[in-house]
Image (cartoon, rainbow, N blue to C red):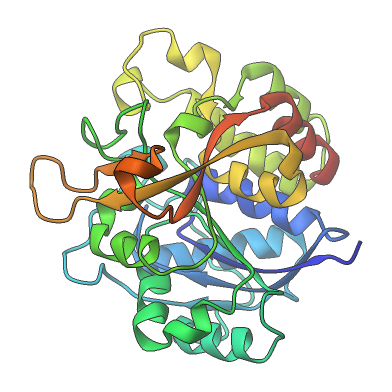
Length: 318
């Protein structure tokens, strides 16, 4: 099969770093057209630098990086550097890469790239707040609907939230953007915390990835080890034994789906986002009953095969 034409929209971020490492390594299955960055886990200048740095470590300077929006559509930025570290990559130093971003106009890059390809051929992976993609949909809704699929990490149902009691970070950071994306009519495959909590980077897997010995494998293992060492109150659940079982691999699940969709189970649903309430800001109402919800607008990932996901890391980071 021909490689999947893919654009990555991201906010690296320790788990974004692992997702990018996997995408960079899967040359035989993913044709990376470019990356767009947004403010999220850290400020835009740092997420853009981190994307370029990870690209350099992976030896994939052929993939252009385009900086996007520096803040949410209507709100002030909410960073997650308490989880990802002040530079966004744990303890890894925020050194400047040799090659920087190709532009600071991610939306224009998205429009030109999607319009230049046949309809229903390009996939889009989103691993951060959906600000860039909502801006694309506002500027060129017909262009967005030319995408074959959007695979994104965001939201929660059964698992509750990881930044508030009911909200997952990517949606909470820019709920208005998420609302636009979920109402877009695009083909959406959504990885909420319900799925990503099923995939954990245990100590044994960190050791196995480290043993691969490549620069990008060492970086990915360092990111996983950093997450595993965080205090329980910064994890997605405050269970005291959580760090021992491994931190969730949120963003790598998005790339793993593109590589091995058979490792996941999907359910059609309707997703709506709370944008008004301060108490439940960013809550995702995920409804599986069509008689209650009306027309479905997404596919919700309900089950994930953790061994399959982690095996992909061993295959493509070596």
